[in-house]
Length: 561
Image 1 (cartoon, rainbow, N blue to C red):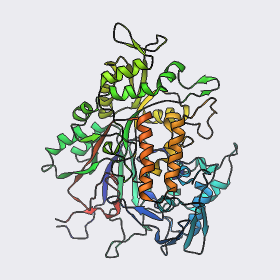
Image 2: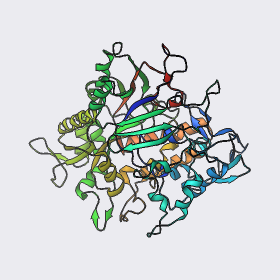
Image 3: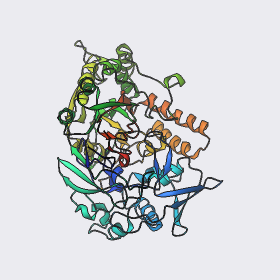
Image 4: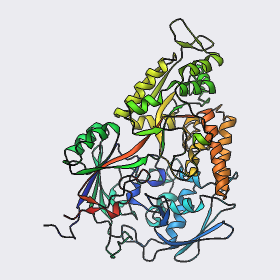
């Protein structure tokens, strides 16, 4: 017989790919390990989206909204037992996030106003730290407090030491080949082991600050195992054979598992519409590298024609995709901002939508100078056949079905799509580094706060995929052009962050959505329901679209008989 003290010794979950890095500042992929390893001064509740204390016990915002003073909880420690202090906070921001020699997307969301100034961070005393901004910044609290704190004693030397190329050693610190004992964290778990293509094992952090209502240390579980399973089909087999304790699932898996719920001793949870967006994106970069165009100039002219992008949007039957690929478990996606965000602009409020209309698509193409031959194939004004490659992540049945439908739908308006699934790491490298690609199917995770997407929407952002500037250390690009609408969206993102009046903020971000839907740097497709299957033996589950399955991992334990 179990007692109330019985605890789950481990939980086994799935992650679709290997980690990119164990260095938080350098990470560009999601999902990632950092939600288990680190916390910031405050945290976002995965159910409500509200901000709650984490490493800070409290904070005060000045009347002019230009200063926040955070007070740390007493006696905080790192996973190696060293004290976690205000000095760690000052170091994390001033020496890592604000360090121009360190390429980090975090800096994009902390830049303020047209000047792109960064906050000032200074120590007031042993437990208080002050953040100051030069002008009002609406997401100030969420961003200043919500980004993870890193250990000064473990990382300062790597920041200050330069490699032969003159760049900080930090850029090669805590890669995935690091001795995991050297990685110092402040979250609920530490890294115990990592086996490439197999698993990541997290071990309970004995120095984690959080306690339950009875004063007991959490997390309750000793180990969390992330099985690396690229294929959703393989992951489903593992869940059904008891190899996984929880699994975020798609529509096909939902239909199968729903019939097995009772006898399989698990429950399927729905978190409502998923956060984030999936889309098709064209490479609009007109630049050249070492004299060679990133995109074939003939195709670049098509992609940079707004009517062409709009025609593609009208040419995709999203209703059929929702019903056939997603089994009706979702809704059409029309905006880059998640529907749960208070800044989301709905079609009823004036957001343009592209419902399936192949005749309209053909009209747009012909009005833009395209023409059809006697076989119904689309040609441009010079007689070139309209054909392009669309890449996607390999190994995902849902993505494969989407690619097949896009290929089929666009063939009906005379466009040939060469759908090419490739390794995820190769795809990321093409989109962010080599920049040599034509179109891709992808997704971006969402947030309640629109300015979280500043790195996507700023023309100089670290992840501006449809017209990416070179990453630090990459060869320069000649002839890259920023369109007027693109610059305007970037400007409005800054203006929206400056505006403290919530009604006006909604109007500003509404205009960014109108522009994005008019000019279509992303052709949005479907917003599926967030679904997960979780074993009955796990108690404390609070699955949500925002937080996922494990946002409250510190609360999970074995259900009592």
